[in-house]
Amino acid sequence: MSNEVCGAGGSRAGGVSVKHRGGFNAAVIVGIVALLSAIVLAYDADYLYLLVYIWFGVAYGLFLQYGRFCMASAVRDLFAVGVPRMAVGVMIAVVLYSLTAAAVTMGGFSTFHANPLGWHIIIGGAIFGFGIIFTGGCASSSLYKSGEGNVGSMLVLVAISFSQAIFVSSEWFSQFVPASWTESALDKRMPEELDVTSTWFDQFMTGYIWDLSGGTVAQMMGQPDTFMGIFIGNALLGAILPTFAILVFLYVVAFRKGYMRREKIENPAFGDHLRGMWAMFTSSKNTAIAGLGIGVFAGLQMWVTGALRQKYDILNFGEMLERKGFYEQVSLQGTVFDPGYWYITTQEAQWGGWVMDKIGFENMERNIFFGLENGLPNPLLNAPGMMSIGIILGAAVIANINREFKWKLPSMETAIFALIGGTLMGIGARVGMGCNVGAFFAAVTNGDLTGWIFLAGMTIGGFFGVRALTRWMEWRASRNDDEFAL
Image (tube, rainbow, N blue to C red; front, side, top):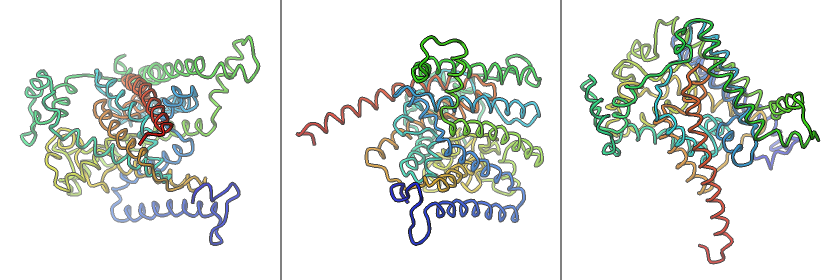
């Protein structure tokens, strides 16, 4: 029911208050997930591994929706209206996740692998950042907004899914491949089922990405398993200090002037600036709480997933699928996409690829992305895909409780922007080897400095995206004022 119908006091329809109906709907969602989880465990206890993903997804969805946590908003609000609230919430989450990730790594349960360092990161980040401005949400917020009933965000997810699947499997851009990539790709011994020169993305991977290297700060220090390398290198040097520098920058350029004016402080002392920084942190209580919760649960997921891998004696969920006889679900290496931590977009690419494969598209399993690395598991057997579904469900729970759930159909313009922006996000995620979560959030919090490069690219793309969207809105307004405009 819309917010216009359900006022602050909770109107009644058919004798049931909207407030109570929202709570009932939320309870039904939780109850269904719990019931299905119990059925799955009764059928085969090994599928606890899948259920862990979906329940952590529910937790992420609760926090994301509660805090309206959106990295697209962080970029857009900063450039469009000079408001740093969401950016501050993101930085709080980075600090918390870096500490929990360090503890998990120290305990030997980390599943994180650093991204390769190269030019592709900033380019992919820029494409992704440009796209999020037009969709009005990043990869994670598109999921939680779908849980609120936003059909436009659902279109973004569709565009992200199929744009990635098409991009990694099509031959459209093969003529633009540098000769050096082709030569390097041909030098590598590959399974005969794959033709690494058939697509742009295959040659991008085998002829460029695989020739790069990367590592965490701890690995660069030569102390990947020590307290000094993990807590001081990865957490403090790789995440917390850069985050503090960004927070100071946000305070100086976007918050300080307004705070001093509101507090009527003409000659601020150091203590005034400290209070101003604290006021910036607490300017949005919900966003700050969301950042804290996401940071803690993201680290806990790494610990739980790592512990389960030790329990089941697997390195990848693909091994378990093969034990169950699902050989067609996994890649040629016997693997599926299974990061073990909060990640988005690759599982959506698998959804798109699985659908395209089932309706008869060729080359879906004969490329590097699906055929060799990530597989094409059934969505019901896709562990990180379960996490994305969990985010949608968790967001639906809290949205119903807060009476914020409402089916919202997009206008034609919004739908077009959703599809175009989602397509750019999908392409940017594949070029940059991840999205705002996998390539930035999960990277920097685990001591991988490439995440800051992706953030820089996303910020650049977001800046130009805001400029482009503003120009479009100005042009549209001028056309609306033209009595002869069609």
